[in-house]
Length: 160
Ligand code: MG
Image 1 (cartoon, rainbow, N blue to C red):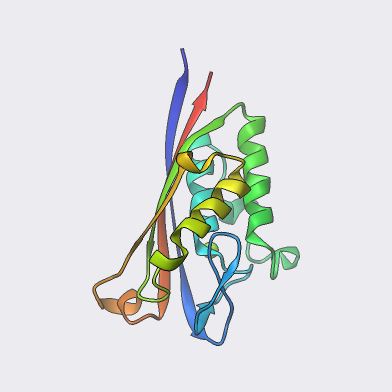
Image 2: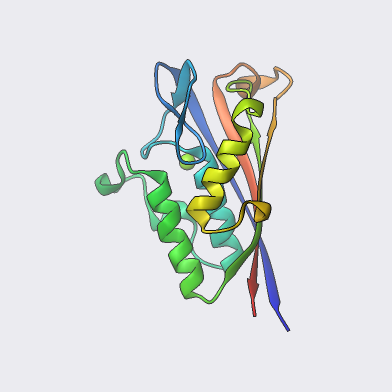
């Protein structure tokens, strides 16, 4: 009988005008982008923590500390790839991943399918196992002012 484990991940990054907006493994057109030690891809960071949480492994910040100069400007797709390798080495397969992107800008809808496909590709999963939704913060707080972007992610792992 298969064994299942669920994990959750959360990440938030401050946004500054003129920086590239990376979300789900590629750059999308936006007048602002995340401030971060790596490339600031908040979606990939939250998904990585959800996978690590489900597998019972150390969190992203412990595995890739932001005090490590080797991580500066790192491609988050590579970080997520490293995380996936650890999860698979522990015997787990992805059952599904779901994420909510909370941001006033960028609007997710025009990019949603491409982000979903990109995330699925990075995870080596079929797109039906990967979902991404967008929500605004109803103009409340820093998220609602467009000064930040946050992602809540859930991952379900399966071991046969
Ligand atoms: Mg982050």
